[in-house]
Length: 130
Image (cartoon, rainbow, N blue to C red; front, side, top):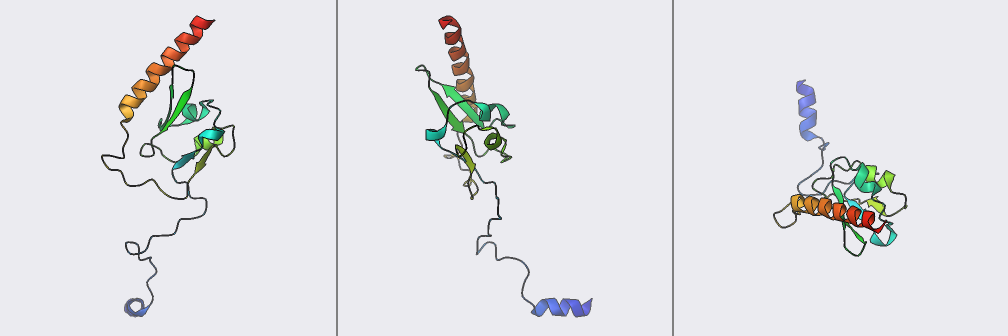
């Protein structure tokens, strides 16, 4: 054991110089979700399959929908990407979400309430039209 310890003292370290150099991202790294609005058909499948509820849609009065994503709630499982019928609409980025600060974290509780209320209003207006 003493000989191994002495060898390790004079050999190159096996670890990375993490704080000084960023560690390389592995292949097929699942970073935060990138959304492309121009490809989206607003089917809301991604919202339905998202386990933590990190994706929400709000329904506007003019029958349009808005996509909302919380990278700090996301568990990066990729279920939304698998469920999306439009290839390329949702993808994983190669980098992680930026560190959370008081200004970057969205007010997700009020957004969820707004999404639920707008969906109820949208469904009620659909029933009235029929």
